Amino acid sequence: MSIVNFKARLTQEDIQRLMDRENPEARALAVHKICKRIDEGELIEQDRQAAQDLIRFIATDAAELVRRALAVSMQRSPDLPADVARKLIKDIDSIAIPVLAGSPVLDDSDLIEVIRAGSGIRQNAIAKRPIVSKGVVKEIVVRGQGEAVGTLAANNGAEFDEEAFSITLQRFRAQPNVLERFIERRELPLNVTEKLIARISADAIDRLVARHALPPQLAVELAESARERATVDLVEQAGMAPDQRRFVQQLQMNARLTPSLILRGLFRGHMAFFEHAIAELAGIEHRRAWLLIHDAGPLGLEAVFDRTGLPKRIFPAIRAAVQAYDSLEMGPSGAEDIVKFRTRLMERIFTQFQGAPEADLNYCMERLDGDHERILAINAAS
Image (cartoon, rainbow, N blue to C red; front, side):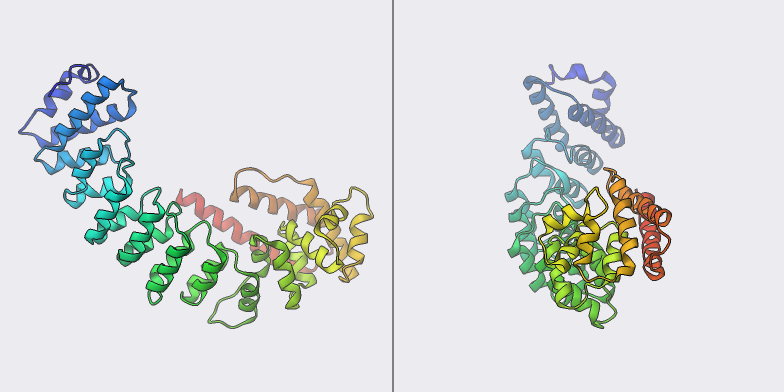
């Protein structure tokens, strides 16, 4: 094997270690170093060919330790030759799994072949890949073992379509431990959320409610029912709802669009919910309600409030909250900035108005405590 053009990037010590047939540990160290240089370097085509020839040579090493060093070092590298990747995924588990879990040079047919072979641990490795295509997802949900399907369900990079969701919900209908992994996804279709409710434990329902928007009618029904021990915080569900107008209409139809709910939503910074609630109660379009609520003058908010039929006693609290909201800016950094914004909003409301209903203020303070605890847990985990 010739590495004339590539050897300038390697030291004599690297080459000696790689050729030391009596010391697999030394060869493994050399492999790690060489692979790192290959992965980090911008190689011209001639050097790239030499590097890939070197990788092919390493892949023939009889020592498991050396082949594993190659698999781990090159598991996410586009410079791993596809033929070597296919050779490694047919090796023992400790060598195959890193490549199955991360190698971008494997195509769907390579992965599907492994899935059909039936090894649960290898199916699970594929389910962890940063991106899992629709075709591979379908193969896993149809043929995969429960652990692999659960891993796939929690993987935001797994491209579930309606058919894949449906197959999983049906096939694992009696295995809530698999279906509950869907809760870990950043987003869930509303129809999937609704179907999960009937198949998962009460504890899992609580987590589902906390992380995902529910269909409006389902949220209201769960809030009203004693379905096991599940409870729905309609204020937080209102904030998460993708269709605020529909959610508000559903609350109104079920006589749940109460003054307290509206005030709590506003105090939590769910301004879109508040605007749609005012529009619904006042019988006007959302756009017009928005203009009146955020009118720079003193009359717009009061005028639209008077049309809602809400009790006059809560107007000072609403005015203070809207003024506080409009005076603040939300930071760009996600959950932590939302918590900071809500904290500042509550401080402004306290400063500007002391007469908000005590029960509603206590609710918001309790929710803020929960927000801060979640942020601490997220920071500790990272």
